[in-house]
Amino acid sequence: MEKEFPRDYYEFDVAHLKRQYDTLYNDMVQAYELANDVPVKEADFDAIFVLGLGGSSISGAFLQTYFRHLNNNIPVHLVQDYDLPPYVTGRSLVIAISYSGNTEETVNAYRQAVKITQHTYAFSTGGKIEEVANIGRYAFIKVPKGYQPRTAAISYLFFPVLRLLERLNILPSHREQLQRTIQSLKKTSFEDIGIQLSEKLMYTTPLFYASDKYWPVAYRAKTQINEHAKIHSFWHKFPELNHNELCGYTKTEGNYHIVTFRFDDDHRRVQKRMDITKEVAKKVGVNTTEVKLTGDSYLTKLLSAVLIGDFSAYYLALRYQQDPSPVVVIEDFKKELGPFI
Image 1 (cartoon, rainbow, N blue to C red):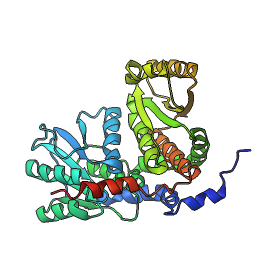
Image 2: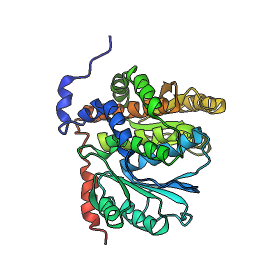
Image 3: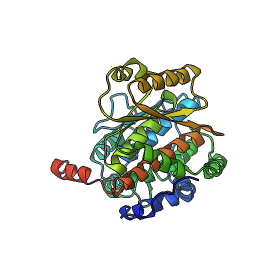
């Protein structure tokens, strides 16, 4: 019988972040419909640019790998900076995502975008992003308040984007697939897996690895550990890490724990690389936990890994007696940075 997570630890979830995870599947359905009524203008797009930082940026990362999986020939670029790259054109589709609506880098890049292309769409709860959209009468999709951006990223900052791309005839309908994905996800207790993994990660520096095909899940897990548990964590992807990071296992100082996300459709040579890397790390005393994922669709597998990473981070925060919601260091940093003129 599995050891039950100590109930008194939940008192550290002062802001009740767990409630946002409890409503996640319903939120996915509601989120998908948000882009139903926004006016759209179809075009022969040369590229898609997703503007976003932090939790608001993960949609762009998901889209990059998802388009690759679908063999869609429109390149997807993630912009996590103040300025647009010089190759944004009048034929580019720009999607600005800022949950608060006040992420200064995204606001600045969005203001540049509306001067270059007529094909801009913004997602936020309000803030300056909404102000810019309203003044110029640009397409705007308002998402509900009351969520942490990192939890809203799984639902309200991703599925409306999919719906928008459907309405622009870039992607096929996901309505039925969304229901199948939710039903598949419900079959697994990601919370239980997260509880078990969080116990292994106590008093370690977690390292998250995945294939290039699924790299956002490793990046996402790392950032969730940072924001939920308030500790350092790092990520990398195969096969690139075998050309640099592997040397770190020659003489390793520090208590690391590797979490490798392994998918059934990873390239066979990547899977062999994962096996060898595990043995190399083991020789210098670094443990590896493998999270093996299968599923009936790419989205199911992607979201499964995301939920495992999220719950691991959530329960690790409680084990460290941390409220997973506040990010005081980031808020203090923004105050020190001062207003963006």
